[in-house]
Amino acid sequence: MPFIAIVIAAALVFGASAFKPLKPFSTTTMYYHGGSFLQADVQTKSNWTTSSQSCPNGTAKACSVDVPDDIVSGGSFISTVSLEGTAGNPSALSAVKNSGNNVSGVTIHNKPN
Image (cartoon, rainbow, N blue to C red; front, side, top):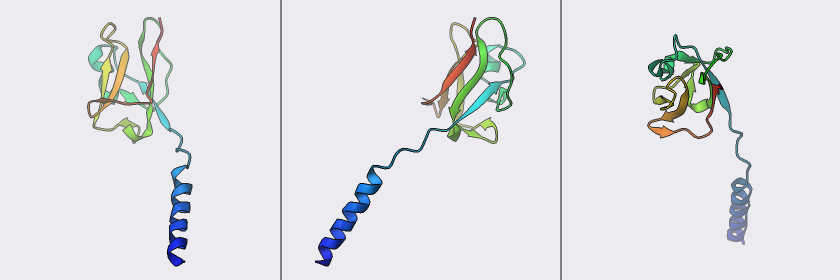
């Protein structure tokens, strides 16, 4: 009898924990503060901070990016993050990678034409 009670209790604990809703995805918005819109500047992590600013006017240029909180620390990207410019337009951001892999849940906001 005690064995059956233990099995039922374990099944209840597993059943209750297996179907918990996932924690909501939390993001941080990083804004571009580079001196120019050269590809090297757009890809420099230190040119991106959490300090808000308006998007530039004109052709598509780097503006802001929403990224998962776990790749940002103290208002800066963590050391394993890399940024990629757009091949056809090096003034725009095209990808955020962590340890060489694309980061899921990223939303890039380049100023449109």
